[in-house]
Image 1 (cartoon, helix red, strand yellow):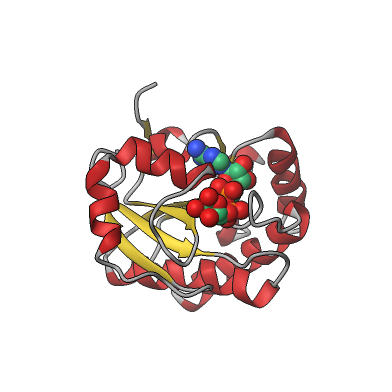
Image 2: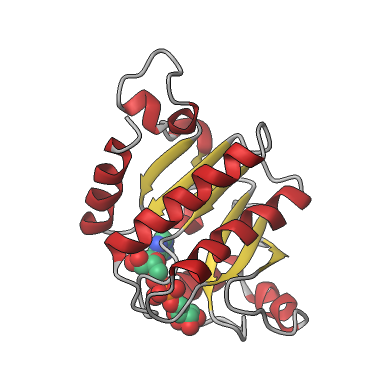
Amino acid sequence: MSAVSISSIPTVASQLGKTTLGNKFLSLISIYRGDITKLSVDAIVNACDTKVLGGGGVDGAIHRAAGPQLLAECRTLNGCETGKAKITKGYRLPAEYVIQAVGPVGENAELLRSAYWESLEVAKKAGVRTIAFPCISTGVFGYPPEKACGVCVRAVEEWVKENPGMMERVVFCVFNDVSEQIYAREMKAFD
Ligand code: AR6
């Protein structure tokens, strides 16, 4: 499958049929179900561990798609603390950058929130305008998906409020039915 352009991904506002921008946040975000490695955005976020040397899940998929140069650059990072993020290039990915973010092992709202927040900060410094997040920590790291969704959507909402005009689009990339339904439900709270 070839790259998926950001212009082909509807915003939540347009999906809900909002013609007036009553809620600016909804016109800035999208929920996309599929493989994050296909997204042609300025940056995709990776859900990695503190070593930042690749692994399974979305991390494995990103390294496979980006090619070996990504791991070579990751080796120069000297790891990353939980709740923090570091930027690398995207190499063979359609995305220009990969933001390597470390979510918590298990349920820790502060650290999960921080992983999203710090990713957006790193993105802003690099001039990123379009960014896609996977559901950080909800796989191998075992964060309950429903709770994680509430935390990360609010973290992003708060960040965009504090940084008006800095991000054109934030994509929540979900990978399965359950996550898609959880995010769709969560969006109703903003409607
Ligand atoms: N595109 C988008 N989402 C994906 C993809 C993909 N290609 N593949 C999986 N997901 P996980 P974590 C979803 O386990 O819980 C790794 O080994 C998946 O369905 O990838 O933060 C790292 O090296 C789930 O919803 O990340 C770390 O050691 C979400 O991505 C550790 O796992 C996150 O699941 C990190 O664990």
